[in-house]
Length: 103
Image 1 (cartoon, rainbow, N blue to C red):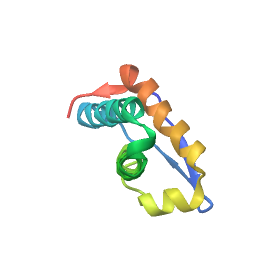
Image 2 (cartoon, one colour; image 1 turned 135 degrees about the horizontal axis):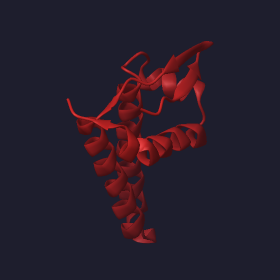
Image 3 (cartoon, rainbow, N blue to C red; image 1 turned 60 degrees about the vertical axis):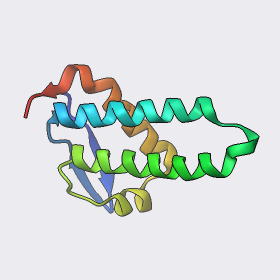
């Protein structure tokens, strides 16, 4: 299993196993993100931003789950930039095929 780490508030955390359930949730959120990007227009920008906020919250929660809920989504956002959080989520998506373990 590939292990990831993140430093939050001066403490380094490492991932727990990425279960099949977490993998499925990450894939769903990624699909929502792709779908949203295809529906964005000037006419629905407010709705798109609201849905984007929802998707970002889901990504943060998945990251927290992958790290065994050792920190909160708020702590994650207060210590990392959005690009760093997106990179972490993308690393989870990239690593899924090599790290899926059944519950």
